[in-house]
Amino acid sequence: MAALKIAPSLLAADFSCLEKQIVAVEAEVDWLHIDVMDGHFVPNISFGIPVIAGIRPITELHFDCHLMTTNPDAYLPDLAEAGADSVTMHIEAMPEPTDAAKLARENDLGFGLVCNPATPFAALRPFMELADVVLFMSVEPGFGGQSFMPEVLAKVEEAREWVEKRGLGADIQIDGGITLETARQAVSAGANVLVAGTTIFGADDPPTAAAELRRALQGK
Ligand code: DX5
Ligand code: ZN
Image (tube, rainbow, N blue to C red; front, side, top):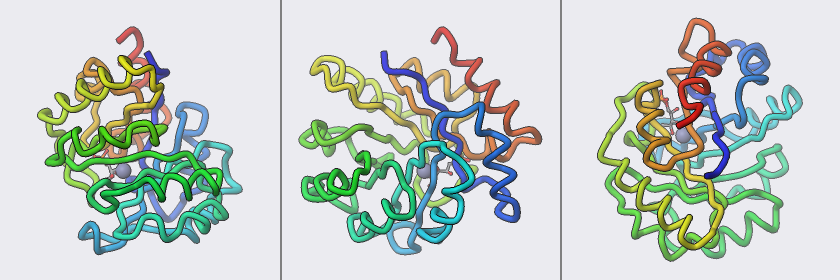
């Protein structure tokens, strides 16, 4: 089974003190999940390339950039230059992602594919060989603080079986409404990368919340 990774979502951080927030959780987490939104693919705008470049010197954490944008391939060189380590793009925005995956590789970026709650795993299947990670949204993308959609777990199970049978080694990520309880369900279904916004950065003590999340998943 792939190694567990905890990925706090910066969207839930206090933007008035990003450095303090990132440094506080750094030792307890594996990736920093960075939600880029364009107000077009999703009905919200978050932050983009200058913010990623601004926080890059603060930490050596892996920057996992979740692109909720209409043209996710348009900014790959700029994202790489800003310090992104990997990008995930929505299959709904990029139904033929082969060239985008190639461009990501050319820019030394890890590459992953995301699907919305209503999109079946079948939409990702033809492209699984391209992906280091497949991300299942367990809320509608665009906003933090929503409730987990348990029906997504069936897709996580399907993807885990697909990856294991073929020895692909892709990480399986879940994003949206992750709490200690829904994280346990997601890991039991086969997820190994847990994105958590509200549960970590929304907590009174984010590093303790991240450590508790990891502890809750040990032995799962
Ligand atoms: C939603 C984002 C998520 C969000 C998760 O569009 O992709 O990463 O920050 O927030 P929580 O963990 O609060 O559901
Ligand atoms: Zn996200």
